[in-house]
Image (cartoon, rainbow, N blue to C red):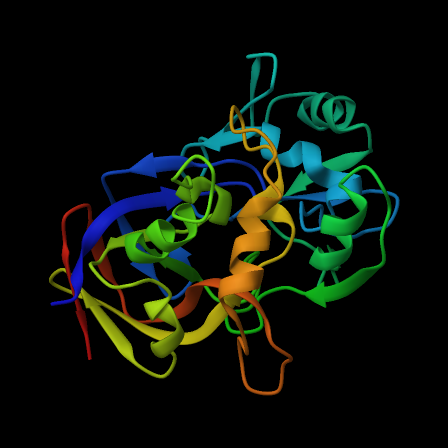
Length: 275
């Protein structure tokens, strides 16, 4: 056993803040209710993503909660709207300053924009920088809204290693948007060694780790009450610039992406074994 599940987090709407859970079912598409919805920019047809913070950094000031069919979005001023309410798209468009539509079925050719993180660090989030286009779910079942793979993993050892380099001495895992936070006792960045291996979690769930997670500018943004913090990216860029996946250039990486080998229920406190 390498540790246990310390936290479980679901993001019902892509790029919005999410919610903590005590337990959740996990299948090939990921956690039940996780990233089943997204916002489409009506002018471009692209998926709204905080990976382009100049355009979409306000996304991480909204919070989505609830499972399929019962998702609510809490706005920065405390108001909330339910998915399916009349006028919900108009409310979200006003808050974000751009015309958007909530959807669970983006067009097959939908892409999102990813700003180059080093250029965001240099210029700031209020300055436009070059973006790269990427397609969704390269290692996920068709029709999903995940960036690459269905499950994102992060260890407390890695969080401690990053936090040790920050003035505050700690970093909130919310900045790195994990699905599962695994309590481990390592020196940090042990996720680098997991691609190609399997994690057995609790009684049934088995994950196969595919890649280290390359970080964009999202960790630097304000997340709800958490203020903007460029060091959340600068520290990994200094400590853990590695190849996320064969064929890619080295990038700042924090955490790991995984796909589901065997579905199951995951609970806080479940033991985690590395096979």
